[in-house]
Length: 294
Figure 1: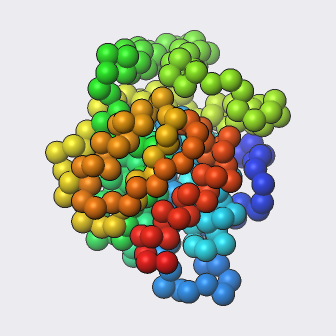
Figure 2: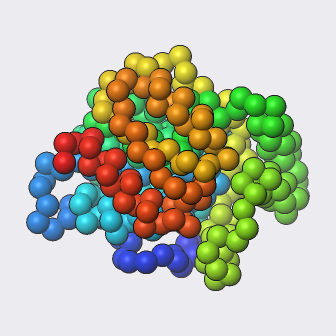
Figure 3: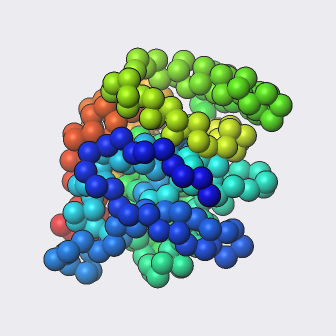
């Protein structure tokens, strides 16, 4: 298992531990344990990151706030980051949801709140659908029922599919195509500073390019619109009000389709957890607290 790049965020992240997932192999994950002097009845949080990034890159700036209140479990999804499970199987979001259920079984957690950002929101929804008894609530951040609706989105996901072939033959060409799509969709300048940006780029490129691109293809095919209204656990929808990657209107559609969710807005675009870290962490904590009444 690879040694990950040095994290670049404030505070002390949850410690690493390695567990063995039956039929899948070893998985390195962050497990904060139960916070000192906290109510043992407080729920456990599962953190699911977005497409192409890692758990640390997505959630690093929120770890300190969340682990002071909750036991937090976070890991890289299949093919992502330094530690995501590597498999020759075709990438499926359903497998990511099943991985989460397997993690809970191994670490002895019966129920948890599923917290998902962007693609991670799709994984959270699928965890509820496939293992409903394991989910006590959800926080869906900058996410959607469908990620491919407009002509531009159909084009972008087609480019991701197109990049899968050069990824297997010419990895650098595959990375170039993937980064071109990501840049075109987000339109972002550098994230924080050159040092952080260098760490972030290494964190992304630590992943398996073929699996990351296949995850993008799977995300383009995700559609929960026929069943998301059946979700029967408390749900918070955190909406990025300046998001162009998952358009704000699409995030509001998700909230409208759910039965009586709490809607919490946060300022910033799709990389708000990095560039508006304190604000995002505060809004996220507010949304999670509502799920369990305090």
